Image (cartoon, one colour):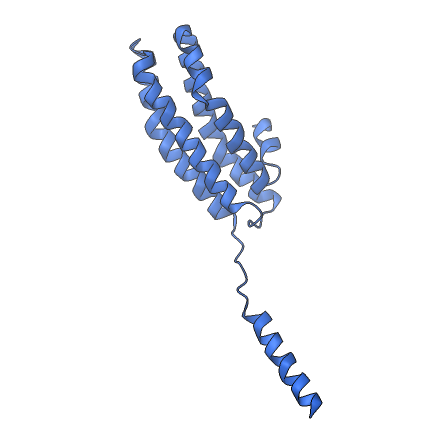
Length: 157
């Protein structure tokens, strides 16, 4: 009689443990989705910055909103990556795939900012105070945490 009670309790306890939902691990496609969203955002922002700079029409008033949008896009990517942290199954080939997707985005950002600073040195302080450096550092760190080895691969590209 005692054994049946213990057995019933054990079966009940096991059923509770098995009822706990197992969190599905993400794959690299979710990380690449973050890259795609960032690319879409930067593809809309950077040409506007480049156009203003290349036409010598860049001023603090018309560049500031674009820099703020760029920082916002980077911060959105960072937030998305933070949500994936520790939940992505990756391999070294996945890291290569992410690095190859991320590299052109960061190259375009770097080229646009360098172009702005070179063609209009008066706006260098605006870039410095916009928070772009911090946002870039944060998103790059996020990619490294989610997909180990991405920064090393990016530095090699």
